[in-house]
Length: 411
Image (cartoon, rainbow, N blue to C red; front, side):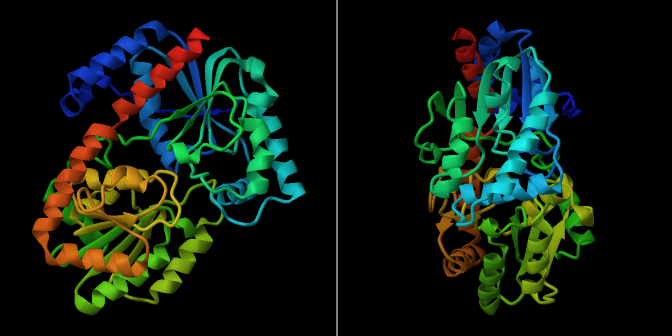
């Protein structure tokens, strides 16, 4: 058996005051014909990334509306995750493809996990490339299959996508964050469904200024001085080195500014520690640069505190599947500056809900503009939060999935 993930209990009714009664009623109506349906989510890891954060909310909410929903994590050793990290980077445009041995490793672990996947599911929902071969290997184990892609595959390495396509093309339903991410050759029904954040988790719930200031103080951050913050994995695509470069330009004009780079180290990201160490080296001992991760006791409440007290929140990605950290940031009502790539422009209307930039220099300019004009920061923060409320909260995401489950049931 694949490893099941234990999730807590959540109630859809608790979201009514945030999302409105009409959406909650629509979800209940869509769930009615799906009562008792057996649904399994299959992913690579139970912690450390956006997929797992989504599933810790989505799975209990699917249960709350009447589905028999489970979440299983695949088995893999270091050789497998080394190969899939390379695949992930190649699908986002990196030039290096997997070699024959690495492709064989990926397929061998998919075969192992296909054998271990239990059967009798109404829907098997496979997340990302790591377990993508399951449908081709054991289609009989579920009545309906969905492949959910969480990464930016708009300009993939052509050899990598060509090798992967036979395993993903024939899923009856697939989901991508943006239309631009859909590879040529997908045969089933293709859906464009952006992800969403849970406003009621410890990372996103309202935090009193006093509590937030106390938490920041525990990590040496002075809330009475300007704070720039990026929350993201330590990954070349998230460009923490470029954020440090932008911070240094800001510091020339505003010497008392601080920077917090905060991320979690995921079990399926073997490169993470290497790039974390490279980020520390690039900071070069600057006492005003705070580089933190989950091994420094940084969890959801700490991230909430850093974001809630930041004067400018940044996500200066150079490639980005969607970037849930963007919606998490602007849900705090704080001004935002982000890379003009991937799913970030879906969440940010330049100059209205935040700023979009394409270089460390532009990032520094926009950050200084906000720091010098607090009224502008408040305007961007208010507009940004309402945009997230309307488009990027979990109940909307649940509704979209239920629509797709009903389509699968009808076929």
